[in-house]
Length: 586
Image (cartoon, rainbow, N blue to C red; front, side):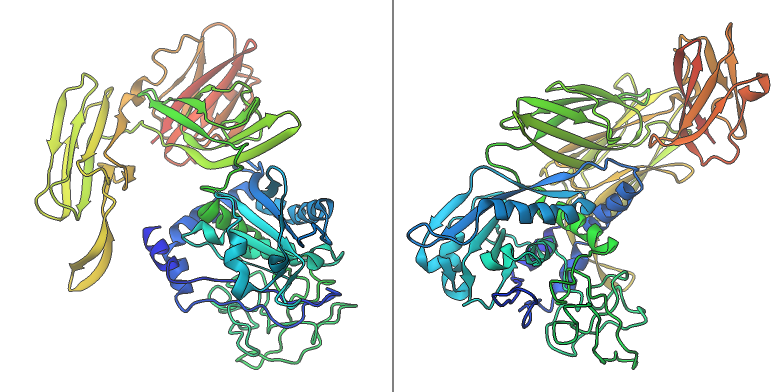
């Protein structure tokens, strides 16, 4: 992320969508100024984007919360000095509501915060971008999307514009021509929201005729045009080659291989006539979701009504995590918490406590004040990998760039230091091995005296070449399974490692149990008095793996030979009681 913002300081991407008063079609082109290093910027931010793209597709499969995140916005209406304007708040709200019908597919919703700000200024009423934007942006509110509505932009030649994310809130704006907004068939506002959430035009980064580099056969779709493979190549369609009546493309342009283009004239991010545009592709929806969360979701909030909380996390060696949530929201009088991302409200108290089993969970908080509400999704906020490992050794690998900063220690359950190391006088890779025993709980703690927690990246020379490297540490089992890895942990971080897998059900007071545990092929459900009625098996992410009604003793034998190695949970129903047990598959 650091290198991404270093590049962002060097450029501004602005979109101008030109228009005539009738707004039936886009006339002219959007003056999209995409710098030469734009793709490099994307690559530098690839890890974060991939994280949220994966999150989006998991949401689509209902693996995580499908709650919609509110995107806070402040409305500014510029009037003449007498307070006159040709747009009303109701017209703006209606247009935003229409835009939200699309954004819901990205799990986003534009939410207007507080009262509209009216600006009586003749100069800004008829906006000249090059001369007046500094004066207009002086009205920006921090930490929010500022949407301005003016009577005209550049003498009615521009319908609206916005900016790609910058390392400055000066550019957290969308500016709209009021007439482009109020026209019944205009898609300019949702088009600008697409840009605000880092979508490019379907024809790519240049508005020059014939500059489209995407091939019709899609062979370079991931690196050319808009870089989406579910939007066909676009030769820069517009009202000159697309009918506003039947929306048919009548152009005869061919790509570099001589194939005729067959563009999608309905895509909102194209220059197709407004009467035709009513569609985003799934990849575009995914990218808007990621674009918001990576760049603006971290700080956008309504000034007097916003969602925030802290969490105190405590892990235990019996593979449970207790999390104490403390609400820090502003203006809330009621709360709804979905702490495990299953779209079910778990708590309505202000500061709940929840016990998690291993898994990856979204946390969703909705706050209320009278008839108003706002929701924020914290994607994969709880990341709790199992602490249970069946191994006799733990391996530690550290890659150090900043010397004499890092130390660590490895303790058992009695707080006895078994192993320790650092500080390191030499940069590079350092490896250590720890012998461990079964039925024990260990704690690995790493320290950084400078407080930047293995957060340094630099160019290093290795095997005859220079390459960029990042500091990190990694814990693995003797068998090579990853226990934990991290960088940028601050001043101190601890990780529990438990070998109590042989005693998973030792303290269970229910009348049912399972054996053997761990198992490679089968587990058997044992009971004392009353035969169980049914059971369900879940993986560490809480997904149902198998369920069965128990009709006879043969049903008590559970075949786990096809299961992946790891931790599972079995819920056994017996006499209207549920026993929740854990087992390991070797």
